[in-house]
Image (cartoon, rainbow, N blue to C red; front, side, top):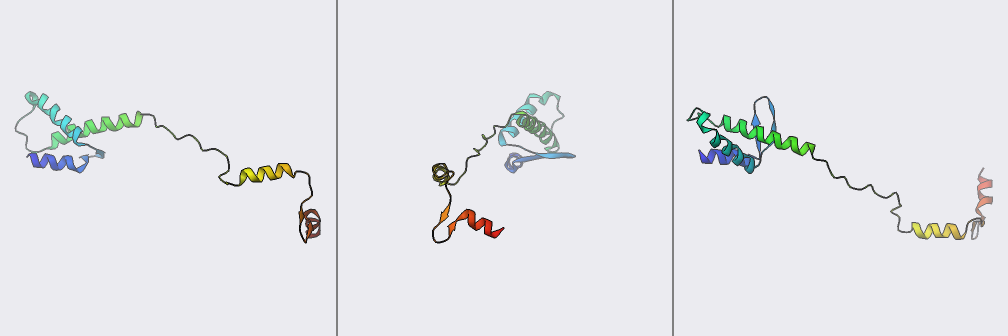
Length: 119
């Protein structure tokens, strides 16, 4: 009997007919067994199978799942809108230092003249 319960706990989840499977740690299985021991005077013993234990474990796992859903998720701070380009600072400095100056490409001429010729 202990091996059967150990096998159930090793699964990592618990099934209940008509309900979604729930994550179920060995600690939840242990708590379910403690609850059954606490209610032994009200149970019809011996029990033919582990279905009642599974139901108690599922209820505890469901409560734990609900508690996890209610716990606020800590979100990562939003990433900066800054560029990931390591040369961006140098490009910005170049633009500031040369603002308003004509762009001349050596051997070709002013960029403005080239653009006018393309249009």
